Image (cartoon, rainbow, N blue to C red; front, side, top):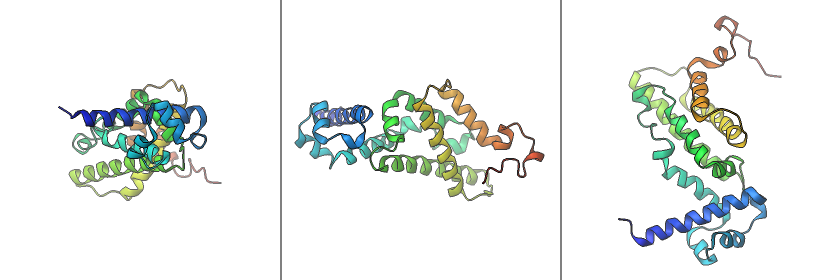
Length: 208
């Protein structure tokens, strides 16, 4: 059983996080104050500063809470190398974003100085790179592109799509968007756009 003090801490932090998210979506991060956050959360200023240095620290704390919750956020990442590319970790990200849509909107918009978004991006990238490396080692294959490059490219693609998905009524379910990302990762952009492999050289050259 968790001590009552731990439960109070969790409730206090949850109230502050919810207050911050609500206020940011209403007014924007730079327009709100710690006083407004504590008033909305019904928490004293002293209590706020016992947990967070400032509102920026609270915003980054939201991302760190997502990291601590990664058993829900990315439950299959550790076993992805054993199961092949299932898309399951990505599906959990989109499902989690669906459940916590306001939080993801605040983070993915880069509110504040963008530090929370950078931390979230680094979290996803680190998990992705670890999964890619584990899979390559298990299958005894040599990557054709450095895996840090692969992980950053994959993460950028995921973050861009996730941002669009939480900000708009796209009509795609978490399962559908995951299936599209999985096929894009497995078969590539040439296949996705309907081109044949022989059409690939220069066919998708979008450089100015």
